[in-house]
Image (cartoon, rainbow, N blue to C red; front, side):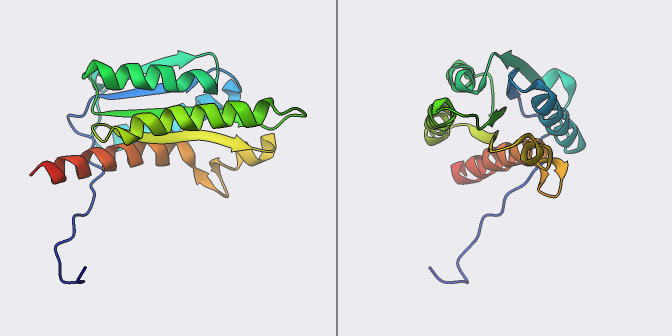
Length: 159
């Protein structure tokens, strides 16, 4: 591809988009901060309260179920997935992370809805805290704006 070829650049204008947000209750001290950041970023970029639908689920594993239901409903332009899985002493961490990522990835691969993946998979609580406004940025904000940018890119491709 030539560098002179037309390039589509994304937009994070959330105005008029209907966005579903799926949040895990497990590690709620972290996930609530992820949610606060996601909502803040969406509103800063044009979202209104009435265009956002927040659904809480028990844990990260269940996020994909609701994200898929939102995508299948046809009522949402984007889905933002927020959760936090902290490594423990058993293999449970690996199974939950893999299941959550596979399910979220399946929704993203549909190619008809923007998906933002803000599910933290970390070794320690400190690492999670660094991802809600610390040295690693704010992953809730990033996931929300990523979902919006993907929607806008999908719209560009339709033209």
